[in-house]
Length: 176
Ligand code: ABN
Image 1 (cartoon, helix red, strand yellow):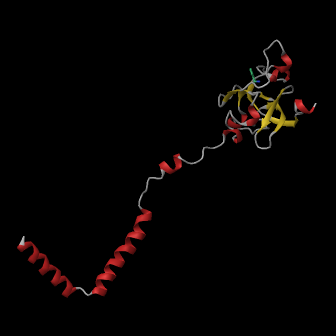
Image 2: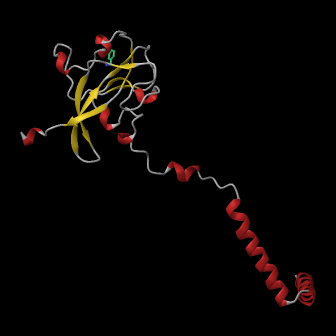
Image 3: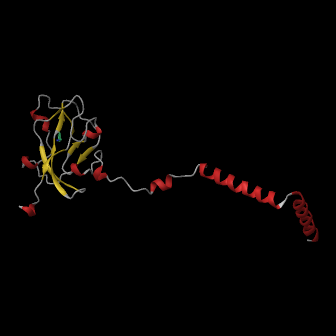
């Protein structure tokens, strides 16, 4: 191993004669700064971080069946069909009769009366079919049954989708 020691001793001496301490430090410094500039633009995999991001609260997403106003909606969501939460898509008209349910708003802890008007005059939208039935009862109690085509009283009875408009606040049973 003697040859090994003398080989490296010779190389080290040559390097020490050729490069001053100041220039060696400046080379090391440049390498560190260069690495700091390049590393942030390398293509890091950020998918894993996004996968752990907080999931969107579906109770506040009016294109999801779990949206709080849809607690008793049976039909296609107009928000997926070119309309909004309370207006029919262009080319359709709002039903003259409707079914009113009661839904709890998780944002303020209050109960609201929701009118589930159908939008009429075009064939079934076919997007975002939802079926939640809070407070709903079977067909022999028509007044509290939601599985009905509310376009029945319109000139064109074709059902397209359903909106969910707030029409009032509901009284809590305990307050009566
Ligand atoms: N109110 C929505 C709907 C329309 C047609 C048939 C059943 C339910």
